[in-house]
Length: 431
Image 1 (cartoon, rainbow, N blue to C red):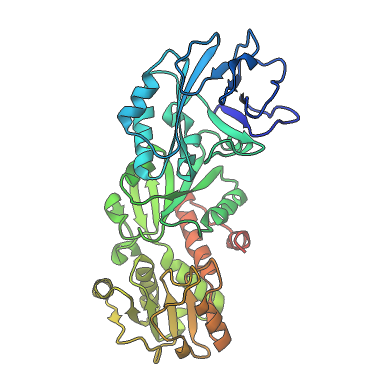
Image 2 (image 1 turned 120 degrees about the vertical axis):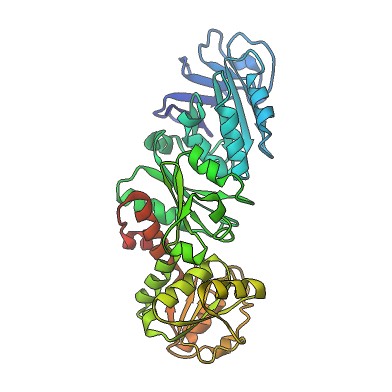
């Protein structure tokens, strides 16, 4: 990977990088002795600031002007990714030495479009995605045929950038894993899985792919050589048609939280159920010690909770806001529809909904029905929810949503990399 250090502020000295971008909106005076591996970006400033005889390239932005230097023509779309046709036509037009296009990435479809355009252009080019979903385009230089990739020094000069130091350490063939869902602002998985990778000496990165839908998710995983992906709300069931096969418990659940890329064949599995079992064991109450469990929710996570409870020998009732989804879950998995909202008769409760993720507490069931020594787990882990607070006050045995995250994440990690991670390191990373 060729890394071009892009400076957000004037440094004491230039970084250790293959190339350097010096922006005239940052550098009032260019450093002396600029060589062929430097890029001067005008950024709206006058070209007279570029010294005569400069052998590097000059980024003139979206301009067709003739200049006495090697030219980069760069086009930016800060709102969207244009069509493949527009991207390709823009890159192929002009007499510049290098064509650059940077565009905002908001979906898997955008990443797929970038891949198709970049791999079909026959000239020296650089196609980069902006935003969090665009980060993968900056890492996969070789796949996209990009001449180099930018890494920031000091502060980011574009959204979605990694630092030049990170880029050099990762290289072009690092392992890429990630998570998809919507929204993803709350997720701690990147921090947790990143710590696990560093501990095991795995050269890789865990990225967030927050997309409004899953169109082309299968193409993107294959095209960008993504080793695996976690799947969270609301896509655990929706992702199944994009996979080549579903294995193990995921087949019975009809829900996938982990995708594994096996040489281009996408395999879906489910590790959420293992996270549920792990969280209860960490709390000191095995699910096998429970008799009747109420599962609140009817999505993919609920299916994993039902599976974990049934495998532990429990009778399971399901409560949810959408009767049709609750009935479908119960029919598929042999659970019963909860007869009402009372907690009477249950010795365990699992919340599998996002209720509580924000400052809300509309649980449908009556919190006053919680009893001392009842086992309670809330999959919401980004804050202490109303349910958890009430359970603690009542003297319930509370299984941690973060322990559930660690348990499922450890199993996903092992499926991707073939080695068991240190769960204590994962736990400490998200404390």
